[in-house]
Image 1 (tube, rainbow, N blue to C red):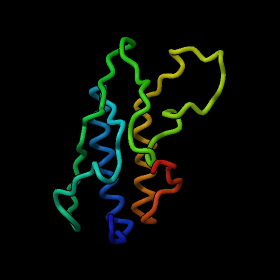
Image 2: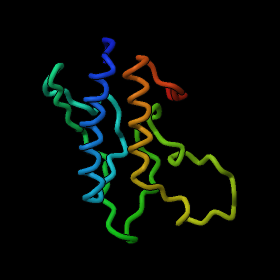
Image 3: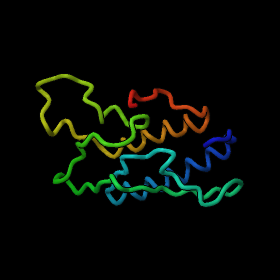
Image 4: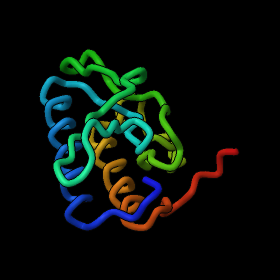
Length: 126
């Protein structure tokens, strides 16, 4: 991620990341900490091979018995659902759950970082 990549290279990398996420999501798993540091380059350009890694905080969702509620991940790549952004006493516990779509939010920020070499909204973490 330290050198500028071509649009073609970025497209190839993201396609592979999306294929990996599709496999995870099809099996009911959410990664929850998708970021450049958890993407492993097995083979460089022109024939990119990229794999997802670090599944330490991933979670399997099985039906309605399991929900995603824990605020966990890396601040710069976390979706708004992770944060308590709405103060409303009428929100019940069930409505605070988020979905595997949080992984797709992270992909958007990864794309941005690949193109610009920066994150759009740096977290306030120190």
